[in-house]
Image 1 (cartoon, rainbow, N blue to C red):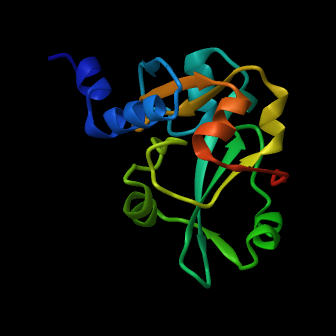
Image 2: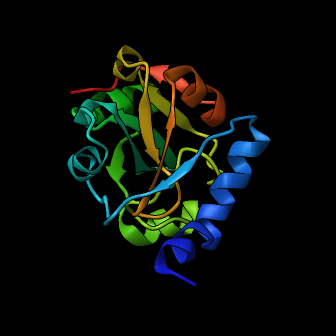
Image 3: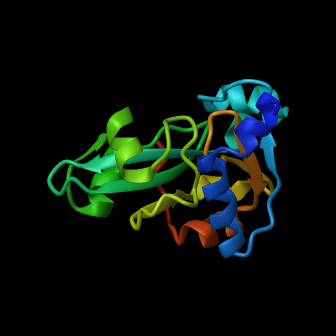
Length: 163
């Protein structure tokens, strides 16, 4: 078995594929030639604008300990003050262990589907693009989708969270 098929058949990528199918999204999961742990790296591999990368960023509610997902443009930073106002508590960026515990994915591979999080926000600036790319369960995998599809598969709330 080649390393390409090992990545595409990994349990985390299969979980994303199944979640996308359940959501009615027939998306091709693409294996990149290397790890795309940053939006810039993913955009370079794909030949697209870094703003078209839908980053999956996990935050932790400082009071509740709740995990929340923010789908953000790779060209923007998340305004944590705006996120705090939206969720009603201080928030902090989650570390790798918290991300894996709450999503089942490693940082760099957190997909917008297949994670089980119920508090999901989608940055409105992503709506400027017809085509977005998101992680598919492994740092070497992505899939293409639209803003509307991203909202649907995440059951996310559109929000202005870009700094």
